[in-house]
Structures are given as structure tokens and as C-alpha cells.
Amino acid sequence: MKRRIILLTGLAAVMAACGQQAEPETPAMPMAEPRSPRASIEAGGASSSPGAGSRTADGAGVITAVDPAAATITINHEPIRSIGWPAMTMKFKASPAALQEATVGDRIQFDLTVRDGAGEVTAIYPH
Picture (tube, rainbow, N blue to C red):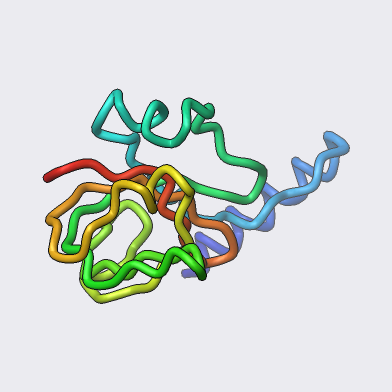
């Protein structure tokens, strides 16, 4: 433990001497890429480049509800390991293209953009 404190203190001193500030270490969270080349096509042809502060992932599950008026899809999904979510049933915002393809009872794979802990389904396809 003492060695780690000494090492970190020394590292901070060296970084300060170089005019840089030491950043606290945060674990990187790997994100999965969409599994289907159709993902961006089904999302209305839009690029799937998420904005700042957002991440992308993909998942699989069964659609349990679709609410076009609220633009939401409820999915009983398997664990989404790339973002640390366990299996559960969740209501997601959904793109217009995903809503058009959504049918209750369908087993699907889906592309997801996560911002501030909330997910939006951007594309769905049969699983």
C-alpha cells in the first residue's frame, strides 16, 4: 500500500513538473458495435455516430409493448454486457424507423444509443 502511495505521489509530481495535471483513473467501458450492416439503413439511413456523452450498444430480447404515441418500445432484453445492464424489461424511446418495424411478441436484436443512463432504440431486426 505504501509503495502505491509513493508511486502515485511521484507520478503526480512528475506530471505537475511537466505542466500537466494527473487525471484520476477511470475504467473504460467497451461498447459493442452493431451486429448488422442493416442497422444504419433501418435507422432511416442516418449515420450511427452518437453525439458527445453517448454510447452505443446492441441487445437481444422480446418486444412486450409498443406505444407509437409516446414513441416507445418495451423490450424484455437479455443482459447487455457492453454497458453493464442485466437482463430486465425496459421501456425505451424509439426512432420512427424502429417503431415501424416493432411488433409485440417479436424476438429481436436491437441497436441502442445510451445517453445519461437512458437508452433509445435506433434499429431493430429479427433475431
